[in-house]
Length: 166
Image (cartoon, rainbow, N blue to C red; front, side, top):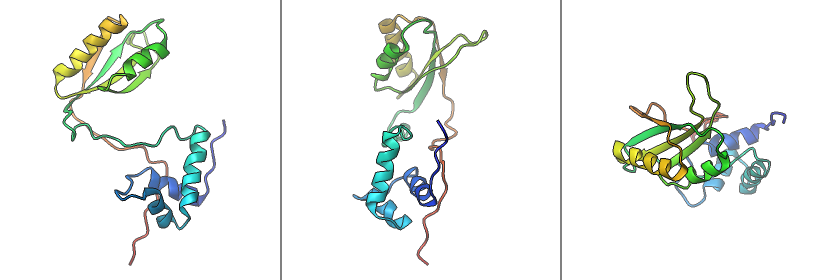
């Protein structure tokens, strides 16, 4: 699939849409006003990118630490020949899990399935991991606890600053 080409206007729209949206009732109109287009142009771009599979979803990001979830852990599992779609459904059904990944293994690192867990304390993540081990039958896993959050922002593909009214 060739890399999509975006017009300057589309890049400006995507730069603003990829940032924090306004808190008002019309965030897409606010983007359109800042870029100098009709709201329908913004909505059509977002719809088209969603239909083409370029934009996976458009949603809110919960700042879990500010919401009281002060502990995070990446749990690495050895899934082997288990159906990854089945495991993905099981793991992602848990509200404590925000990310589920499948990765290749290496001789020195046999883990091939990863879940990012969030809890109020370390015991919460350990409890969820033990419950999932029981449910899935995956008994070989390791928990890598987060020590400090170093970055909490989305990828920015385009940069464009809103013009200031001088």
